[in-house]
Length: 214
Image 1 (tube, rainbow, N blue to C red):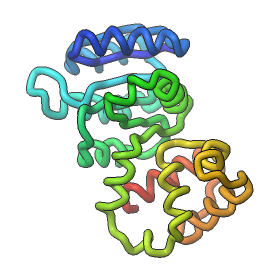
Image 2 (image 1 turned 30 degrees about the vertical axis):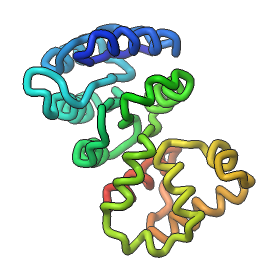
Image 3 (image 1 turned 60 degrees about the vertical axis):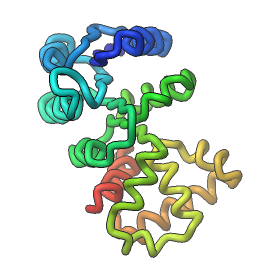
């Protein structure tokens, strides 16, 4: 798999290159600002683009705007945003692009190499990887009516689903059986009025729609 990295911190960029190569990615381009990202993606057509949220020249939302453009022009390229802090608006902007292959993680997660590699591969494969802190804040800020239908255990399952966890991983985290997790997920879909859909991305689309408040 091929990847493009855009991160203005040289030390972090070097670290990201090493981690991605360890994960089996070919790093086609590593950039220090967002202005060159679109050209790099057009040239290399990577499977994954890893971008810092804030980069030169203004250090505001260059990475987010580049990510959204990538999602529009090259939807087959997965996008993983990295941020120093939880910035709900940027996470919501990315989620609004719909579809799988998206991630939003705090930079501190890079230190856990095994966990970060798992997130990279999950996003590149069309899944999601949302930082637990981001998920928690998005769940708190959206309209609470649908949430009131969920039991505490279903809320726990939903948070882990939003992070991109598999049924097996959720079962392990909550110390329950996979069949119980499956029942909770079906209840969540029903209580949030999410109709059945064909394809492997039903789970991803359902979580995104819920987080967006659709």
